[in-house]
Image 1: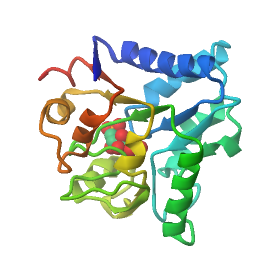
Image 2: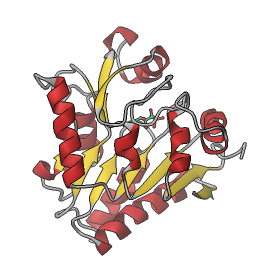
Image 3: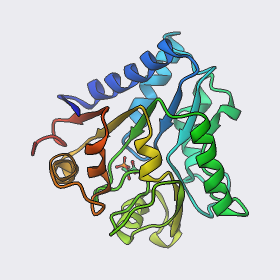
Image 4: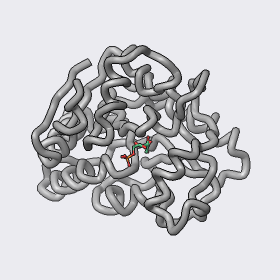
Length: 240
Ligand code: F6R
């Protein structure tokens, strides 16, 4: 596991965006695994900046997002499809048919999960971007006695719904379910880029990276992957 600590978030974002750009410059048809939430926004801004300066193109790339809420109306502002358009896709040259997110409104959600895994097998992820939940979740793989390998439907933990309620008008509006890539699907990525920002995540960063490998902290399973790069701002890394 390679770890890098940054004095400023801007430096961290720049480093992460560079890494994606370098991947695409080396392999234009690379598959990128993408995340939502607050953490990647600055990284996506830097990627857009690089695209505008002609330093990277997404024309041949394919992307897979980690997760999507179940049952939100298609263009709901808090849906991850909307988030991706707003923060990245609308601003770059990635053809829309090459950008994939699980469809949380699919008629048959189980089939949707299987189909997503089939696509991931056909186009394995080169670099997977991950944020980290306060409870150690990655994607929406919540702490539990056991975890599922493939893409599946999850019941969101109350603490995750409360954490995400800041984006909705009220807690009641936060969906109770989501579709997420499983930990097995995530660990198949060639390179994993775990990005964590902020003092409030310092404790879980320490647990995930240096604590026991346990399904009660899904991010701890990243310790078993051969090629994980961890990018931390100095607050998130202060207990290491
Ligand atoms: C988002 C995702 C989640 C977030 C995590 C951290 O696609 O999969 O695991 O990465 O909840 O969220 P933020 O970045 O908002 O702190």
